[in-house]
Image 1: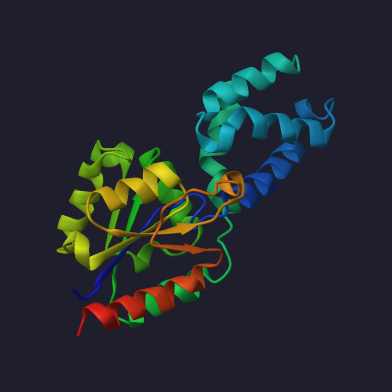
Image 2: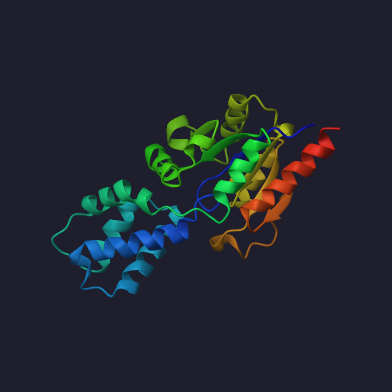
Length: 228
């Protein structure tokens, strides 16, 4: 069956969250003088540890930071709002992001984003990458009331794209939430290796890539084979 749709995760797949976060934190440190009594690298490293690759929301991270470093005269909510309002300005995409998406569109692929996270925040990050206009459908867990690895979020995305699972490929960095979950509903899955899961060796994906541009030959080869 011909491949007609490609679905993507956001963080760690399209968005280089590690690079984006480092850039944001460096600037936030400079902008808030209350941090300057702390060594900059220590401040950044502690945040990254507490953040746990994005799985801990930043209200808890900033509250713990204030406690750990005995920071005075600032409320954690101010820092959280700064993160929410400004992180999008520091979003960095992985190499070949735009060219890969544009090539897929050139080959008439339907594109969808399927991401866990807070709706407006994730959408703002997508806009920060300047690629939101390339997606036919955008599903963010906070907005749709479903969360990966729940198969329902994949099924809803496929329904919106008017695609069967056999006609679609999912690209993500999480071995369970992205790869195993999308395969469970009948899609092919491409695992994009990401720094925080680089040591994983038993990911049973249909393809493994290090660069987004590697998606193109995989999609086209499947399209040729299944489209005969």
